[in-house]
Amino acid sequence: MYTTGLEKIAFLPFGLIMDLYRYDIFDGKIQPANYNAEWWKYALDYQGICSPVTRSENDFDPGAKYHIPADVPYMRYFVSFIIQFQFHKAMCIAANHTGPLHQCDIDGSKAAGALLAETLKLGSSEPWQIAMEKLTGTKKIDAGALLEFFKPVQDWLKAENAKNNVTAGWEGSAVCEQQDVVPTVAAGSSAAPGSSAAPGSSAAPGSSAAPGSSAAPGSSAAPGSSAGPGSSGVPVPATTTTSNSASGVWASSVLLILTVALGGLNA
Image (tube, rainbow, N blue to C red; front, side, top):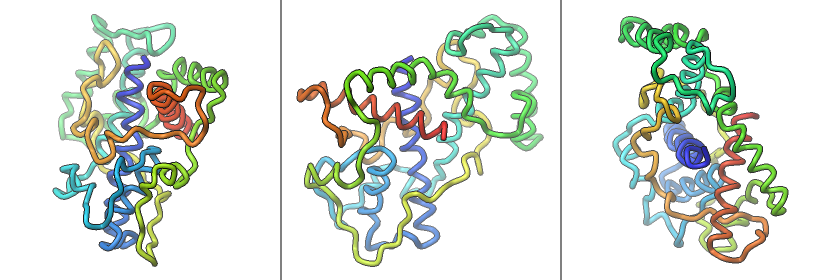
């Protein structure tokens, strides 16, 4: 489950900022003079990641992700990582599963298979909300199943953080200032890193994963889920860890990412 969390939860903030960044360019909040600096502000605010080296506006790091220069919407991937758990829970209910959601295995369940088949056979004949309602009983996207699936990990992370005196989160630019890699933003920038998006505004249910896998739902990552600018930079926690070794810092950083991501969805 911890490994699945590294794949599913750690992707969410990256998947979100891809389109938040694009949206703010479209509405003029991010100006060409600050394209690169504002990208790294998003990476810091949402992922706790600093550029591994000093960057400037002579660079265009977001362009390393195909979807940015090709103008391909990314919200579908973000949404798919949430609703795949919603689909999984619905089929677990159909399969009469009892017990924790993360222990559900629908393999061999004819009832779960029939529910999925009834949904898929609609094809494009109905809006995605209708297909989603047929499968889950609701037209609304809900992160509750994802939170339920990872609750044992979340509880463990809280206990580990408390034991190691680690505070989840990071303190804005202070993190990058410790590395002397804070990007410079031109005067007059009006970017709003905290602008909100409506998950699912253009996504079709299950657009990148076929629900119903017997392991963690959606075990195949959406395109781009492991790449992207900043993905190789190790997030540095703003708090002092119990270990000065590289492995100690990395372990604490992973705890921070998973805890903050889970806590954010629960908010």
